[in-house]
Length: 324
Image (tube, rainbow, N blue to C red; front, side, top):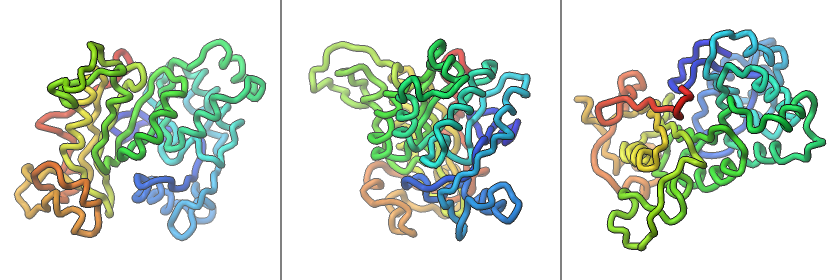
């Protein structure tokens, strides 16, 4: 828990539970696992959640911090469970109720809930009314979805997008967002950013399908965060993947935030030896070769700080309108 977060898209972090387990390729080099491993000894915060240096699926609830956001007077954007997943299968629904009740009361803050388990998030929302615990039940009936709670899913590649976004769309939320970090491949968000049958120029420049006139929409996805991977075993991100998501968002009037390049940055920004995009898969099996066939250029490992967070000469720090 930190009142001043170093994460570019939030102001503070709040961790009312600890522990996790890996569910997809985006979890391979989990930063939270590395941090937890350093504090997993006897008597330390993550004791019991790590085995042989890896998450073991055990969850430790931390009810003593449930009221912490109530004590923060200045309004903040708060990333919920930056070190875990609120909808991990080992987190009781009754405890998730308590977390949401805290968020319901702390109306001055904006809470950002990010999960890789949207199927369980949807299950939690779809419970019968009688299964909601008090006092959250009253809020469930009067003020839902909570206007200060944003719900998001992690999307590292097209497979994750196809599996997770439809479940997010089914879940009621004031704002739905995507965290495409670490971005491990190209992602087409067209079906969730656009009204049915409409294609912007980046997708169908000649309108060869004869789509009727329509408009882009942000009814389903209201914000997209993009970033490369950091850490010792970080995998490179092709700049075209980040650019494509930016262009898709702007064609659909959806805010776009470029968080970072991660450990690898465009080689044209540096003078050292670089690695051809098409050679990524040959150097340590970073990525499948089929994902490297399109696009030209070079990339090199220069470290997160040196790589920075500029894309095409500028930063992109866009937020949902009126919610910065």
